[in-house]
Amino acid sequence: MLYLTRKCEFSAAHFYYNTNWSDEENARVFGKCANRNGHGHNYTLEVTVKGEVDTQTGFVMDLKELKQVLEREVLDALDHRHLNKEVPEFAQKIPTTENIAIAIWQRIAPKLNHAHLHRVRLYELDDLFVDYYGE
Amino acid sequence: MMKAYLTRGYRFSSSHRLHNESFGEEKNREIYGKCNNPHGHGHNYALEVTVSGPVAVDTGMVCDLGDLDGCVAEQVLARFDHQNLNVRSEFADLVPTTENLAVVVFDILRREFTAAHLEQVRIEETANNSFTYAGGAEPILQ
Picture (tube, each protein chain N blue to C red):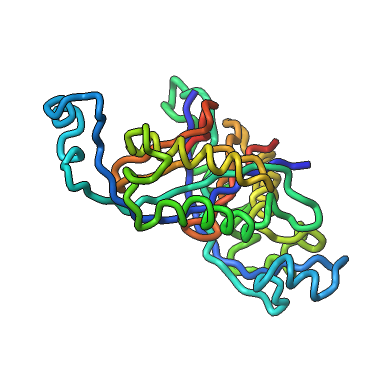
């Protein structure tokens, strides 16, 4: 079994706000992130797939195919977007790093034909990242 | 409930000397080399703390980052930042290698941080070496 990781970056705006709560409660729980004018991050995404090495190609999967899936399913939808306003998953859900990682998993897992998605790792900052294994 | 793993990075700087009283001077020098210098030396440690748990529906979070930051600041950084590890009680009977430091930090956070499940700690002593401890469990991939 081999693990292959592909990295890409995107930049997006978001804010954290639970509409079931008062402004005060949102400010208490989410702090500065509750500012409804939004703020943004440069996200770094690392997608790890696993599989056996194909004896003919020597690949776990074709990197070009993985790159295309990430461009189509993730970057086209999230890069230079406002997550709360433009990405359907976050019409109701709060676009925390946790929920963005889950949404990315759900977008790409069905599109990977020749390898098994192992992990989605999403960095919001150099010192803050979330891993999701589809659990 | 979907389970996610959250990792947060912290930095602290400490001095230490690797020395085992039960070894003779020569053996200490042989095993620990420059790290056995009697006057000690120091590092800028980079600590990564990984916690896990279900992503709460109302917050979208594994845990409140402020709670984790507060706990690490109070329980780890306040103990070790700008301190000499050898004179700390945690290392009274323990050589302050980064292996042992990782175990000590893990045990402190396992005891003190209860808002999510502590999975592992990873400490970089320099950019070229790091140590990961998951309480005896298999650590997650870097």
